[in-house]
Length: 314
Image (cartoon, rainbow, N blue to C red; front, side, top):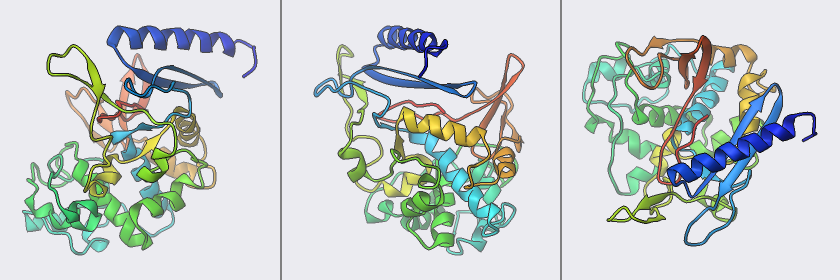
């Protein structure tokens, strides 16, 4: 980066990141800012207190629910290609869908999944081989409580996004992770963003840390991220890992024209309000995959995530 003022911003960001990490006892962190077309990033600390490596702009972090924006964007590509309709019932694409309420299963649309208005509870937790596939996850959905009629209100649902991932699998005929590579990650140039643990483990990656029983010392969290046995069923809602350098490229993509992957109109549509969020700390409305919020008169979009390896924001 040139010395036309951006170097100073980098120094200021690095100082802020270091001070904040030390204040809150964060072992390692990476932050990136895209400002007026210029990228600025700063990293602090180590990947693992027991086996430390310095964090840098290419260190992988588990993104947790930030994954939902990736899933929504890939599904919007299928919408733009005419392969999926947002207003269509999910059963058009996932005919095996069954819920505790049969009428609700017939009424839930693709858009309901993407803006958290399907009326599904947060998520299912179960173990076994079925938990390691999206088809197995969908087979257990009759066990999930329904908390509202479809389309009546917003309620954040990991399960809804996992079901959206099953739509991607069926429509493309590919495993979800491979479909995401072809639809989005490869054409968008996200070469350091992965669902596959085998890809993560051969690169520098950060682990999460939790306090010990006396809350006196931090220890690496286990299991790492969402890759415990039987986790693929949760990949669409929270299974991706990436780094600051790729997330800055991702930000350019989302703020730009879609770079031949997705029409600019489809990106704009994702940031339009589809439902209100009254009295919510997450935002004042939802688009498609994005939380919307007005801050000091500025309209913002965002998605946060939390997991054992990180608490990222995009």
